[in-house]
Image: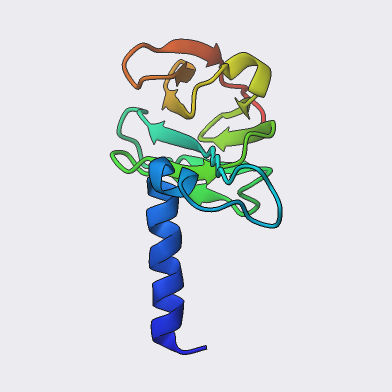
Length: 139
């Protein structure tokens, strides 16, 4: 298949995914009564809101196997499925936390986390925050 064919197919899929009206108007496929694509993607954002310090903030999780540094002003953002996910933040202290638990997050598709000096904070809108975890002195 040529490159232009690949591009045409990708363009068709992009239009289909972005326009449910277009997808719903397609003929049934393989004998099915409806053609409907429902894509749900979870966005996780973790910010380093610690005071300036030479000590770096690192993150590890079930979906991020190697530690990654989270710098101030550069949130770590990841697109995930809606399974339960757990993580660990390491600074001069550590905090284990549930990055995403389906039963607790409701229908929210964006989850924000903020690492602060007194603990780990959670938000659904990046405006209202609640403290979810405290730092552990031992890593």
